[in-house]
Image (cartoon, rainbow, N blue to C red):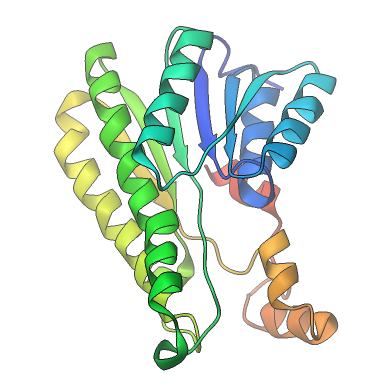
Amino acid sequence: MTQRFEKQSVIVTGAGSGIGLATATGFAQEGASVMIADLSARRAQATVEAIEAQGGTAIWRKMDASEPEDFESTIQAALDAFGRLDVMVNNAGYGVPMPLESLSIEDWNRTLAVTLTSTFLGIKYTVPIFRRQGGGVIVNTASISGIRADYGMGAYNAAKAGVINLTRNAALENAPHHIRVNCVCPGGINTRVSQILGRDDEEGFRQTMGDAHPLGRMGEPEEIAHAI
């Protein structure tokens, strides 16, 4: 590894599994000190233990990324532990496969809160820090679902579309302050969520997802981590 992130600190939300786990691990392997933020304390702690077993530096915090107080306190904990913040990865997301007419208001609100509002909070609370430091990087996990329609995924797709345009606005506003804001738009990725979606017909699900991609297979979380 190049250790190109040595002496830098990173926060990754939704870092207990999938793309978040792979991203946090990748940053740690490159020398960064990483805050593992996840709604599941068990998964967050397991991620830290795996990183430390490889010689990396990480701490964890149980966090609901849609809650402003949780987000602010997590950022402060990272600053207290590492002395600075260089990269914010807004990766937390949530979705319920359901036709719009059957989707509950509660699931609609939760999908937007965890997927879109959390991204807004990550931008809102880190931009002042980055401006004081003279720069920083924000990367948001959007999705190909934000630029296309899928059956039964209206709330999730709307939230991810919001992430994409929120990223554009944040990038425009903060470029003069040397703050880069970008997003990645993964397709079908082999994550815990994908496994849940395809649990009724795993082989058929993988075949369908593979047919939708030029490589003929689903992507792996590590491939998205490399893009981030």
